[in-house]
Amino acid sequence: MDNSSLERLPRQETVSYPRWQLISKRMLDVIAAGALLVLASPFWLVIVCWIRLDSPGRAIFRQTRIGLGGRSYTIYKFRTMVQNADALFKAKLDEVQELDGFVFQEKDDPRITRSGSFLRKTSLDELPQLLNILLGSMSLVGPRPEIPEIARLYTPEQRKRLNVLPGVTGLAQINGRSELTLGETMAYDLEYVRNWSFLLDLKILWKTVFVVLSGRGAY
Image 1 (cartoon, rainbow, N blue to C red):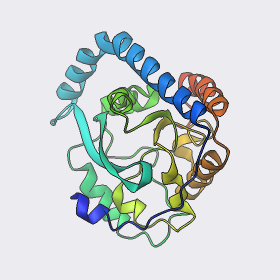
Image 2: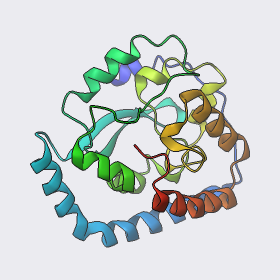
Image 3: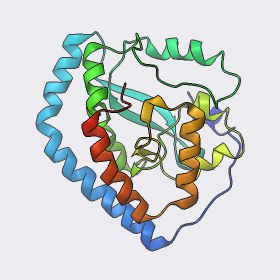
């Protein structure tokens, strides 16, 4: 999808946060993402080989997402679905009239591969997003990055979630993850935007550890 089409997304109100907290957030992102990349490097080759053996296609999934200020960027993940998963999803999305009750991911989704099921359960599929963090297009904590087709359906209020960098984890991820409807996820995201602080990020990261270990709401 070209950038010119993304520029037609309506502009949203901007918000401001204390500069020292934004600097602290960025420092935490860079230090933590760099350290995690080094620690996780021995597992990358194993995961890549497993994905390639399990189903045809590339091991690293790339997709256009909408980030801070409505700008597009390329997100990186370990592939957890079959090759034509995007086409199957867009066919489902064509039927959507409003977002509140829409369920983005369903349990026992036939698009998910065997290796993908494990990677999602353990959140290991998100590891490549550490590269997005280092590149500055994502943060450790924030609303999950949105696909352009859904971002275009946002109401003016919902577009406020684009006032912060998208994150690997967030309020929605520690309060239900995939069990939430898109409307419920959006409510948590907007709460995060309204109440963001560096301390809130630390609390979310701490709770994320226990959510990932429990595997609750991951599919």
